[in-house]
Length: 271
Image (cartoon, rainbow, N blue to C red; front, side, top):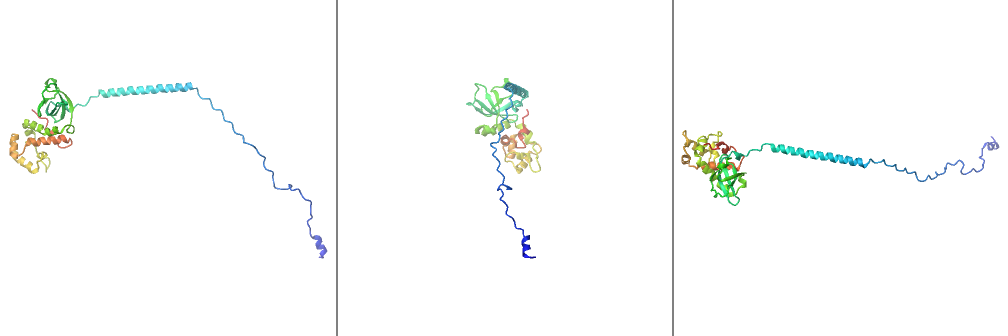
């Protein structure tokens, strides 16, 4: 192919007219300003219920509350009345008849004594104008007011933790004299009847200072005939039986939980 023909087949781009710069362009105009968004207006509140109804409800509530409180109070009064109608627990002193004076305090006008029935410590009000009562004096504290020569009334019970030291010191002596005055009862109920508590312990070992060996000596001295009196017992066994038994009673008064309790087993004294 000749060169002239080849030149004719070559396509040469022609130079056209300039187009507008905005024609066929991808550029788009910006969004026009929209201004402030619309703010929703507040909705009007619903009309409240009339206050008169609320007040009436409150008044009704107050009336109901008052009635409830009143009913509760009335119910409480009824319960208290029912409780007050219950029988009160009887004092052990009501069963006592006689007592032994331990101390007569003239300043406080109070007698501290111990009952003979169950060895109960008690406080008594003396009658006006009586002479001071001596330690170990026997006074009537039973329910028969005509027999009360020295005692106006029984004030109540007490214990060793609430009395003076000199009362604690005099108590064993008062109990010992009471035992000696009723020696036949204690000889018959204890010293002539005491037996083995177990295979290794005898009832005599409940007395302070008495061990197993001493207890066996007392059993041998008692023999089959028994002791006729405290004096015979003391001479045969070389002891002071009334003193030992009084100390045992004193120990049981100090400790209410000690077992066995000779106070409960040997008292009251039977005439």
